[in-house]
Image (cartoon, rainbow, N blue to C red):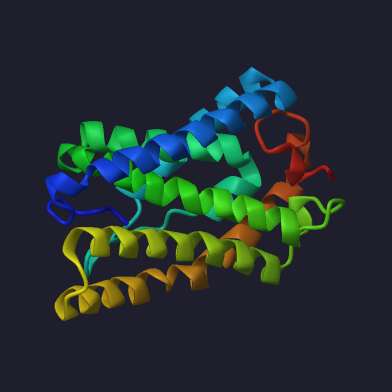
Length: 225
């Protein structure tokens, strides 16, 4: 989902910094709220875990250029369900930054757009989870339909933001739209895989019930709200 260099001209890149600042401010509020509820140490540890995982998602797992961008297996819904909203947001932002600093400096100029593309769909996923997961349902009890809805929301959000940046930078020319359609079609295939991974991870977490209350995972993973 990286916005490739040159896709958005320099004169239009400021918008990415503005949206990233807004998304980052909301993420920091979530971090503060979660630290008050779960403790700063738990949030810091889960954020570190998320950062390592996100770096691996981007740098280690297979990723292929398709159309206007690259297709990655980001597993945003998996991060959210196991580690929580605030640590996942920190992990996505920091994992992307570390990859840019040490492995792909050419992407740093696009960091604002890329981090917006990762974080805003995560916030949408969290909002949907509050609506479709009953208050007394721990995440380890989720079904395939719920996992699919959460994964679809996140992946569709990423595709939507990539489409926005492409159109913002390059307009609506036919060739541009065709390249975007190719990317979107390839990226949405992730939806077939991610819910299965979510359920496998949740099943593993259910078996590892000793993690309950450890501070290593999101409290809602095991406990009801």
